Image (cartoon, rainbow, N blue to C red):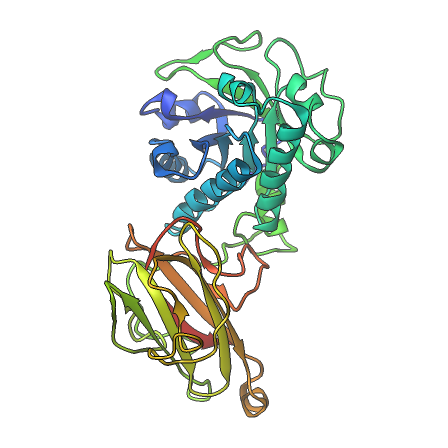
Amino acid sequence: MASIVNTKGVDISYWNGDINLSKVKAAGYNWVMIRCGFGNNSTSNDDSRFAANVEKAESLGMPWGVYLFSYACSINDAKSELAHIDRLLKEQRAKGYYPTLPIALDMEYSDYVKNNGGWNSSNLTNVATIILDGLADLGYYPMIYTGYDELSMLSSHIRNDYDCWFAQWYTKPSSYKYDRLGMWQYGGETNYIDSPSIAGVGTIDQNIAYKDYPTIIKNGGYNGYKKSSGTESTPTATPTPTPTTSDKDDKDDIPSIKYRVRANGKWYGEITNLNDYAGVEGSPITDVMIKPSKGTVKYRVHISGGKWLPYVTGYNANDNDNGYAGDLKPIDAIEVYYYTPSDVVKSTGYLRAKYRVSPSYSTNYFDWQYDNETSNGQDGYAGSYGINLDKLQITLSK
């Protein structure tokens, strides 16, 4: 793919309606930033055009990134907005869609933030730090979208450590004083450089890119891509919408692993490796038990809307202390870690738990997770905070 440096792009949202991106691309705008939503992590705050706009960009081969409009007035709000972005991106990754442009926090003036006491340097800096640092920790390539007044209220950490998508509609971004200019939004309904509209599309926000983000993101291992030293890179996983019956890692000398889940108030049948999935489609999992044929595992679950429960190592539905993970409440994440015994190390080398889960609203799975690793776009757990899970698959892998 050709570099996007000094090329034009657009940013779009629900307000652009059922946009014809083919006409946008034909008019010379080569990439697109797509609003995923706004505010706290509620499906009612998702941009209703987000998924469709991603589909359009993917079908046209247009590099795309994401932004979320922030209404955060507190640290808890910021954490919720971070989870909101992560949830929506994981939903796209479950379809095999990976952004090759940054993930942006849209921080601009709103009466809501001002009226709720959040329009001050302390809150804006706290919000930006939690969300941008959080995105970086999750393996994304973060960016701040803002204007000069807002940027001047933020800490040097935000200004100097994260790329800026700078909004200034009347002239080139001469008021931007820092070293992380990545994109310039030069016009929307007001545009002194180009026409504010595209024929057959209407008024649209227009931008210029100053960095070749697809290359940076793919080769750097951001946004779900594997880190690469070359010019090509691939995502960390390709989702499979139905349970698999075999796996290349399932070999005779690798121990098996069995597992069960509880949903609808009862324990369901035992599953071994990837010969099926544990769970009932559409029914939230509340409890999990896991046992390898050799070696041991420690595992824990995160209660939806709550916290992580303690690690357990057992496999016994009658042992409330160490026999299973859960407390009869829907879970939204699970972490599994496998300890390889010495005899297995000698024959196969060290092994890892390889596992994935499915959100209860979808037949697709989130990406595979290995043990509690956080490299290559992994989160250290399988799932997404705030999203109930209905299916689980686990095997052991090198």
